[in-house]
Length: 187
Image: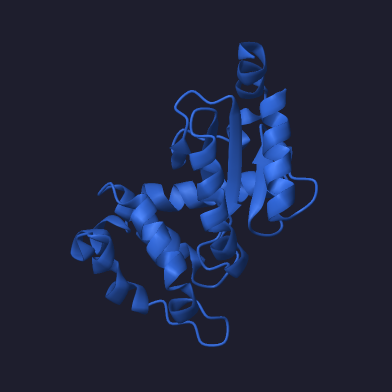
């Protein structure tokens, strides 16, 4: 088991999937890495989020979720900057949940209103003024650009895009994701 785990991380291009700065949830020493390229303004990402969280909870000792960004929608980079600034306050997951909960309001495709995010943020228990300041950190832009470049390198064309130990999910869907994850855990 140890060899397979280290084998993935030792692969020449493993950093394209798992960057040190990427937000993570789940096992500290995972057997399986579930990498998700997501877009906070993507409706499919919103639909998958509770399911992915449940998978990680179910396999909390064996699977680590690694979040990467593929900001394809118009207000996605703005939302990602807010997310990364919230992470400095230890509120990354709370703000991600909040962004998904209110996404139809701030990120609706026919009438996006990203400024509404400022109205919702206090619900996550964050210092909004500090987020406004921290989201201007050039490191955040560097991370977004790196995620975009990595996603392009491995063929991410839509969100959410899932990779299990560096292998793309062959068929898209919740059932398919669960099966692929369980199969990786068997190996």
